[in-house]
Image (cartoon, rainbow, N blue to C red; front, side):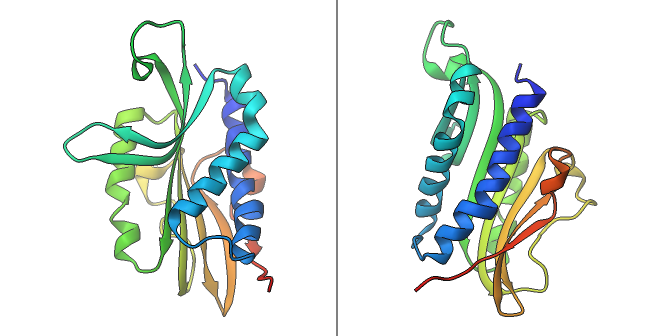
Amino acid sequence: MIKKSVRSKLDRTIKDIWLTDICREFGQRRFIVEADIQCSFYHHLRQRLDPLFAENNLYLYSEFYVPGRRKQYIDLAVFEMDMRLPGPWRDRRTAAAAIIELKYGGGDDWVTSDFPKMKGYMDRFGRDCQYYFGVIDLREMRCLNWLDGRSRWARDCFTELNAGYLDGELYFEVNSLNKLNPGLQHRRARCHFTP
């Protein structure tokens, strides 16, 4: 069982990485494709949380395979593991802590088409896990978030990590439906481009 304090620290770190590191690196034009953002996120999570991971038997995976009818891979996943259990490593997972899916581009369909996938992850890994949906949409938008409090399926365990243009300026935003780290909910950071 993953302690609430560990879940809270993981949540705070994920939100902070989005608002600071990913925002800054996007402004430095370091990302060409979605995989670049995934690699950067992985790097910053390991750099900031390696001691927490080791103390709590947490393991960070990129491109985590989810068996099923279709091949699905979770961009980033944090699992609690018990390495004393016998068998392959997949059988040693005891709890899911965080699932992170990332999108980079533009358009409504490519975002909303991933919501059923996120709901499927919730069915598979449970509502004690926290789910993060990071979207960098390069269009001018009226608002950056896709969901609101009426989205019952997302309550208490879902956070949108959004980025897009508002009035010609690029912003990174956290829109959280979970109750962890209220000081980071609905926070926004302006992306500054460097030459």
